[in-house]
Amino acid sequence: MEIFGPIIDDETRCIHYHTEKDIIAIKFACCERYYPCYKCHEEHAQHTIKRWQQSQFHTRAILCGHCKHEMTIHDYMQSSSCPQCKSTFNARCANHYPIYFEM
Image (tube, rainbow, N blue to C red; front, side, top):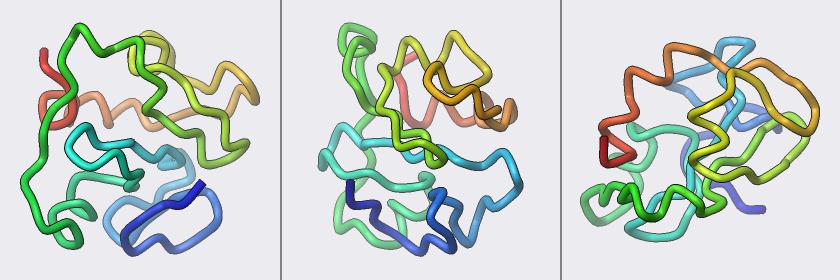
């Protein structure tokens, strides 16, 4: 799975967000490419962000950087950890949901 943007390790951490729990990448609805965060997308994509619509929340668009499991948006929003490897995600990412997802 290719991750775009300035990643700093093999668990999808980037120059913007790189705590122990910053281990997800998001497939953006506008380009179908995985980026670690919206800042990476803004800096490297040549277009504006298009949010995932609620009717698309069944789409596998979240990648666990630890085990590389792809999960649906709905599953990601309902859990604080990866359903496959149980790695904990950064709870503060929820503050950015309105950037990525129609709320």
